[in-house]
Image (cartoon, rainbow, N blue to C red; front, top):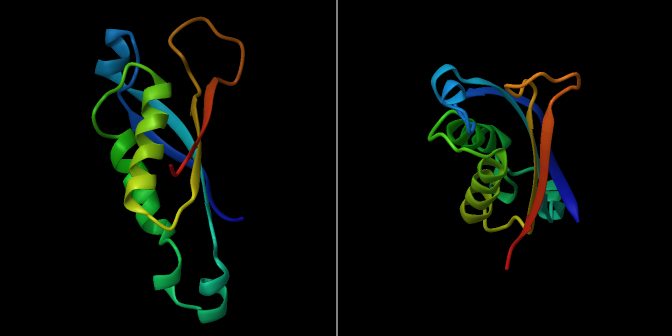
Length: 120
């Protein structure tokens, strides 16, 4: 299966269990991988035969910067569900979402959730 990957997207959102996270917000890093057949797009050189990754970026941005979630697992699920619903030619979506600065004494590069959702 072919893939379109959007890597290293950075957004500011208000997600977390603690009230300070919902009030102050923090940065989130997202990677999205869309699996689909890109042969027709490759042969036709026509945007209508693929997924417009600028639109995907804006959808992910709107979700991360939108309604707060307590868990990054729920945020990742919202992203995957939205993209599968919006882009019917996509067979599966992988979302990797990182919270680089969780609000506790950490000595690592953050917490990452990686989910894979497939079309039923």
